[in-house]
Image: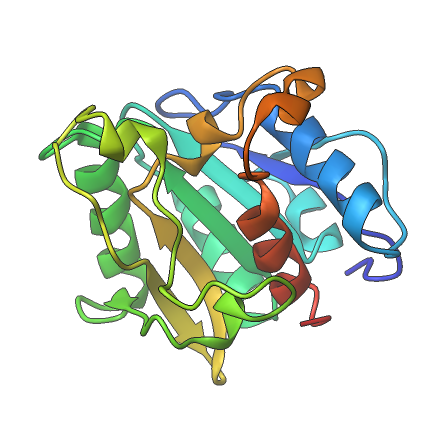
Length: 208
């Protein structure tokens, strides 16, 4: 895997809709440039899960609103990737009670890693202190606070942990939509809401 330079790699999978929140990666890359000194690839990369390209990148992002049903090759690559040290940040853009994305993705994880593999992580986890400090755990999103979707504020994230490191970080908080805006509008935010994204990436890269 290419760890000398960070690349935002988005996973393309054959089922569902994988190309959500298209402005979000550029906002996170802008924040990494603003707050850190890590070398960056300036362009998002689309990685087909059914190919070996995924094994080039230590960080991948997966999202959607609809069905997640991996093919046999996609499932094998996903499992091999995380067991070989890869990190996947998965964000539920549906954010809806009993939503299709959440139900189908969680089923995929149970099939690949076991029914109890995806667990809540404590709000004291290192990912909340890898760069910026989030003493209360995962920051809320406007979609939760405004009653969008399931009308719940999730005060936790879930993860699959391998060798004492998060391998799959799973969010029902819809961070993708929260960070999906024209980057020029960031100056109007009272607080930069992409800071937690910086934490996730630096943790994944082994910096934090």
